[in-house]
Length: 355
Ligand code: PMP
Image (cartoon, rainbow, N blue to C red):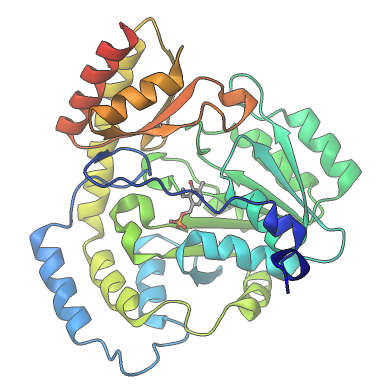
């Protein structure tokens, strides 16, 4: 046996999803909430996890957690709800349910890389439509491709990662209306955005809205959720592996959601720090700074990879996108951290761009 004889060539051609080693560094690379759990929530979670029956398989439907999500996240009563081990797993489930020989996933570029990777996993074709220079959607081009290629699935991150912007609602609605297949509006950054497509589900039968609690402060729980028409959600549910939401996530998630106001308040604070950081960055004439509706900011600068390395030497890890996509040449993405971390980042950045 050789690796080549058993592993599909397109899998061999992939690089595994890259997670940088952040040991000892200020972690501003992965859109996490910078604060540990408040003590009261942590203690309550510990109690709940201590009493979870880990000798048994968990509730296969995670009913308690699903009901709590419905209340807290204002999910329309009539809509179907599906939980995933992170929204990553939901993307994979949706693709698995739709994959047929020759079917296509359409994405915007640059955007979240898992849409393309999962197309490869599931043997679907993938077409990435470049965004405009200001990172808006080229609506005419997307509609032309939809008409010509009839994609089974369209993914739109709203706000978009790694660019941070919210696309125009009108363009997204045109895409949903023109699509013969499903359109997934990925609202991973919803807590920082103030906009949502969730109320359009009533209007569009092919719309799915996907969210995660990761960016809200619960990335370690691995919990994403998908909302859409029950007829579609019920079909996607069939490719879900049994017990995909483990007992500890079910227990801890319910406690966290009971304290949802705490995380909402933190999201507000993160937005305020984002605005302050934007102001500081815009004042630096060496940078091009992109507006953000998420918990991170994209900047473009000369010698980006050198500045990235310089920041790392100073103990700060951001995301280097310099070589990720032609439209991201010279770009770094910085997640909003604590006040102190943000100041450290700004100060070191100022030193480095003036070198
Ligand atoms: N969608 C988007 C747009 C993202 O940026 C991310 C995380 N980087 C995810 C989905 C996945 O989130 P998770 O699997 O943690 O729920």
